[in-house]
Length: 309
Image 1 (cartoon, helix red, strand yellow):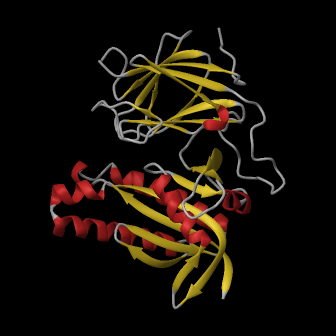
Image 2 (image 1 turned 135 degrees about the vertical axis):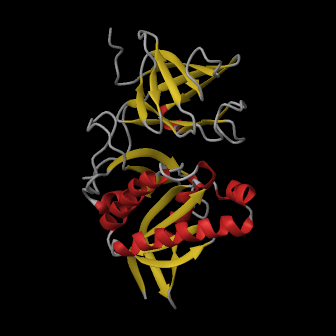
Image 3 (image 1 turned 90 degrees about the vertical axis):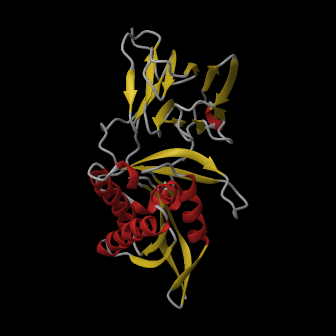
């Protein structure tokens, strides 16, 4: 019998390098312990573990609110664990969450929401929770979570692009410009009405992106909209989003990102957090300015943000 449920797919990142470092037997033991812990967290928050898929765990919840709350609690707890773990065994968790009609057959779960949750986890960065628009609406106000719109994405298996939100679980200042509270209504418009553009230059090349072309991924991996093939740059290093009339830069890297605005004297350091981009400035990837880092230049137009002088 089909039901409306919320599906959670939790996936480990870095397991491939773990097997290379520790060998198959030891790495498999580490992965098994971590996926077992993920399953226990799901069950502790009233979810059901459907199955484990190698380095991933599929769970299902009756409540979208409870599923998103669980995801935030899981990542907070995991971050505290990582601080105590040796570098060689550290693996991040990324989650995709989707609500919709699912079918339960012999203990397994099938349906569109399963597919979407899996695809969202693939697109999410380390320690991120990506959710579909139905989940963002149905979840309501989730303690410790703010939803931020990432834009529309093509999801494999879906004929139309899907609106996707980031469930931000990190402690950040409650500012309307950076975050969107979870209390969304189904009738609320999901598109920012104002248009903007950002021009990014690096190594003699200039690219321009309008606000309806974001998010823009920056990194050294092939397939990034802005590929910077430098060893100091992470494969998926940073992302530029458009939210409530402003561009936001989010660091997703191992070594950090620094932003220096044209009118400023001190660079803004980012370590897995975000800042609003306004006016003109420069972005250093992987190392601070002056340390030989690859440096991008940016120029923003059409944003709600105004340069403070």
